[in-house]
Structures are given as structure tokens and as C-alpha cells.
Image (cartoon, rainbow, N blue to C red; front, top):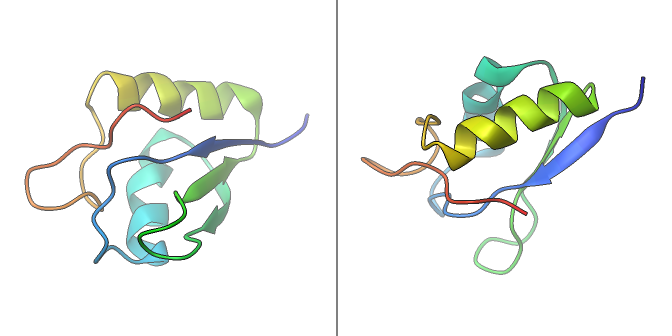
Length: 79
């Protein structure tokens, strides 16, 4: 079983790596989280398996993720 990553769009610039990781763990085991340069890069969240990444991606598309994304803002469609 190999890991899989998703790119996150629409996250608040004030969000921390830890808050993003915690918010995304509701969809499965996160094995890595990289914020990149704020305002330039989109954060990357890596899941233990492709299946978990797909679960998270589907939830994000449905607007089900809250927490690290600003007051009343869900994550936007990741690539």
C-alpha cells in the first residue's frame, strides 16, 4: 500500500500545519503535511493510502471539511 497526497486550496493564510493536519485527520491517517510558502504554495496533505486520500478529496468537494480554513470557510476543490 502506497501513500497518496492531495493539494489543498482555499485555506486561511493564518492556518498552521498542525491545525490543517488535525482537520484532515477526520478523513483518515495523515502521514505528512507540508504548508509551503504562505501566499505562494498550496498546502499538501499526504495520506497513508490512496483510498484515504480519495475519501478526503470527496469530502472536500462536498464541502465537509471545516477547521483550518478560516471562520466559515470550507476547503475548495483540490487538484
